[in-house]
Image (cartoon, rainbow, N blue to C red; front, side):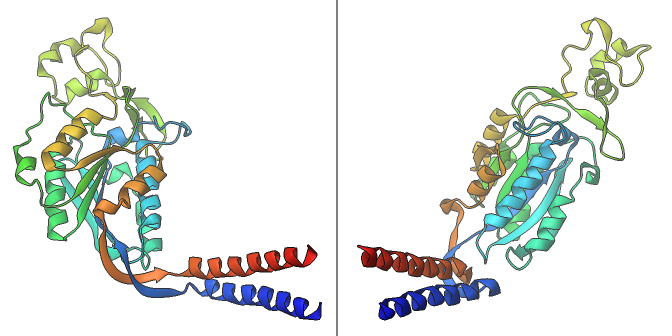
Length: 310
């Protein structure tokens, strides 16, 4: 009996000792999958639309995009390199060069969480041009590309010019990640505190010069007021939906995949898919190994105790 007690004490003490290294974030340089991403986030005004399923009315597409990017950063294995860029107008703006995710996670999370639509440098947007520019930047940094957008453009085009993307096909791997709902929603106007103070109207799109043939319908109409009588029924820039079919078209031209990420976990899964991984040596978190060993010692103690009782 005394021997059994000593053996049980040894197992439990061993389990406690094995867990101690977990408090010191032990790492070993081991081979495994790593990723190299340029993540581009659309910050145009349509990304302020509140149509994220299962979220509160204050949760915008841009909020969902930021949360998804942070989830991906958290899911990427150590040794992975990530750069972040913004999209507005017809090009992208890199916020920083590639950084290792584990060493710089806190700083990267802070940068992403504070992104704002007011950082945009122009109102109009062309996804095709922005994607072309992003591919060039990703190739320069030897990264693959995740382009996060609702696919909405201002002004709208009936057909994309795909020759530029087709010429870049195969240079890098990439995925277009769609965010937002698929039904048309009004685009909000926000004040300096990011509170909704109104919504864009069809007349506003005409005033911006997108539909010159409809200018006559604006006679005597104040800004922000809907046009009576259906005179602007062919104008839809004031409404927005995630344009999945258009993003698939652009992705096919560039040789990219398309994913409609409905949750941060779906985006993280996309960012860590095996097809985009490289195998390289990098510091790996080995805490799960110590935790598993401790669990095995506890299970062994329980099994031996059950045998004694029988």
